[in-house]
Image (cartoon, rainbow, N blue to C red; front, side, top):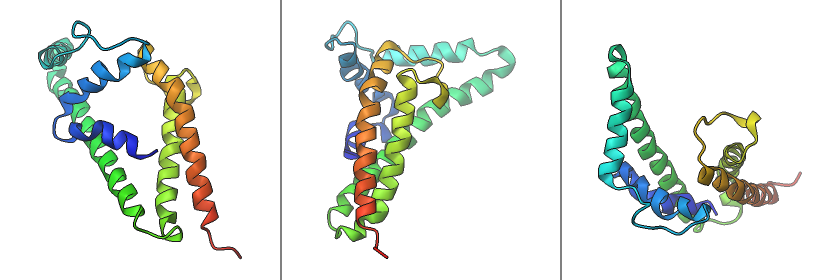
Length: 167
């Protein structure tokens, strides 16, 4: 289950603007709707949106605004790299014995719990953080993926606890 985000976001490590593929072809399904050319963002439109954000920064804070826009794309790339690391861990884990996989289940279990909390927040559980711009499709993603990550957390917890040495 922890492979999914790595495979979905793989290309964003090199090309963070391709996150529009997720917007255009995945998030739209949570509408529910189907992808259309008319409703899909283009690279030029993404750049216009980023430029508009830069233009909206107060004159005295243009550098901070530019750094913020940089950080958005930088964090997109780093998130993708973290997901790729998870994919490598999962593939490597398949070569290990069940007991040797224990550290991976701990890491993936923690990741799953944190992802569950973030998705639950997007679904509307407010005390778990604050995302000031959750879209309707983003809320629907939270509704679907909070339980997905809850299952992943439980499975990793079970795998982790079953391979602990008994006293």
